[in-house]
Image (cartoon, rainbow, N blue to C red; front, side, top):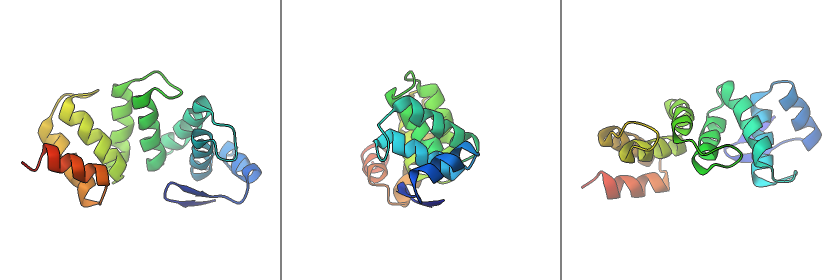
Length: 145
């Protein structure tokens, strides 16, 4: 199974499904993205959450990030900022800029976590330093003054 960033590069759907069912975290992530985006499969938030969770539990940082987003938006799960922050924290520790951005915003405003603007700015800066566009904008607006 080949993963290229957020893009999918899979041999075929049957192979991806088989590998995901056998516990391959990359295949689980890829299958989740397919369900999330409605690519190669009908869009299904509940199935996307299921496969993101499987991959996340194995430490797949992009799956952790996307699962956190599902919890912030209430896609396929009840909206829960506390649980979202837990998944973003795991992914942020792995250096995922999108997770650092989301967790930084949550800390800055106190959504699902104790409000800590300094921690929020530290995370936003980490995201910005990796070139995350929204991280740059948020850091400049909220922290650089």
